Length: 355
Ligand SMILES: NC(=O)C1=CN([C@@H]2O[C@H](COP(=O)(O)OP(=O)(O)OC[C@H]3O[C@@H](n4cnc5c(N)ncnc54)[C@H](O)[C@@H]3O)[C@@H](O)[C@H]2O)C=CC1
Ligand SMILES: O=C(OP(=O)(O)O)[C@H](O)COP(=O)(O)O
Image 1 (cartoon, protein in one colour):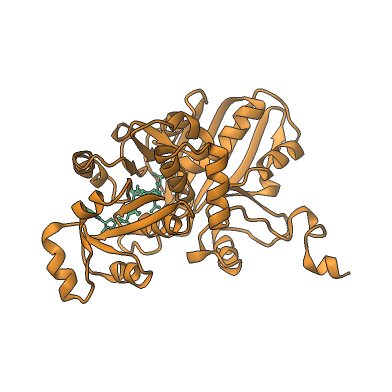
Image 2 (cartoon, rainbow, N blue to C red; image 1 turned 135 degrees about the vertical axis):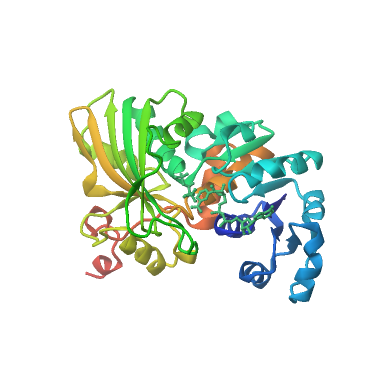
C-alpha cells in the first residue's frame, strides 16, 4: 500500500483525498487543515485523520471539538508520498519541509514548473515522469489541452494548435472572486501560461493559447483550432477522441447546451460533488476543413486534475505502467462517461433492449 498524505484540503485537496481513499493500492493517512472550519468538519465526517497544518494551532482544533492526529511533521513522518494542494505559491514555501522529511511530493499547477523534477499529465507524460523525485500536475486547463493534443499529435501530427480559453472567474465556493460584470483578457498578453505549460508535457507540439476570464463558476470553455499534418475525416477524429477514456463526447441531441446542463447531467448520473473528471467535447462541434480541426470543449476545473494526481502518485512511487495506472484509477473512480444517448441511443439504451 502506498501511504499518502494530502497537505491543503480545499477545492482540489478534498477531491484528491477522496480519490486516494478509493484506490485499492493506496492508504490515505490523513489530511491537513489550517483552521477548524467546515472543511475540517467535512474531513472528520468522512473518517479522515486530521493534522494541523500549522503547529501552534492544535489547541484551536481541540477547542472546536475536532481532534487532530498530529501536525504536518507527524503526517510527513507517516507517508510515502505527500500531495501538496495548497494555494498557488504555498507549495513552493512547503518544498523545503517535504525535502527535510525526505518525502516525495506532488505539487499542483498553480506552482511554477521548476518546483518539481517534471510536470505531469497521465496521457501526455506518464512514462517520461517515471523515476522523478517530485512531480507537478499541470493546471486544469493545461490538463484538458494535453489530453486532447496528445492523441491528435500521435495519430495525425499537429502542425499548429491555436486555442482560446474562456476561464471561469472562480470556483463556486470562492465568493470573493471576479469579474462580476465583465469579460476580461487574462492575461492581456499572448500566450497565456497554458501553451508553454502544454510544452512541459508535449515539448514538440506547436501551440498558442490566449485566455479570457468570464463571470461564471462552473467550468472553463476552450475554442480549439488545430492544423494537422494529415486530412482525417470528421468521423475519424470523433472516433479517435471517443476512444479516449478521459474525453467525454457530449452526444448530439442530448440537450446539453452548456456548463449548467453538463453539471446537471453529472449530478444526475451520480457523480460525487457533480464532478466531471473528463474533458467534455461537443460532438457536433468537431469539424475538419482540409487539415484544420475545430471543436469546443469544457473542462471542470475542480475535477479534471483529480485522476491525474492519483496517476502521479503511482508514477512516483511504483513501477506501474501508464496503462495499468490509468485503468486502475478510472475503474476505482468510475472515470469514463458513457452516455446512453451516444451513437443514436439505440445500441445501449435499456429501453431499446426491451423493444
Ligand atoms: N480550483 C481549481 O480550479 C484548480 C486549482 N488548481 C491548483 O491547485 C492548487 C490548490 O488550489 P485550490 O484547491 O483551488 O485552492 P483552495 O484555496 O480551494 O484550497 C487550498 C487549501 O489549502 C489550505 N492552506 C493554505 N495555506 C496552507 C498551508 N500553509 N498548509 C496547509 N494548507 C494550507 C487552505 O486553507 C485551503 O483549504 C493551486 O496550485 C491551484 O492553482 C489546479 C487545477 C484547478
Ligand atoms: O488551474 C486552473 O486554471 P488555469 O489552468 O487557467 O491556470 C484553475 O482553474 C485555478 O485557476 P485560478 O488561478 O483562476 O484559481
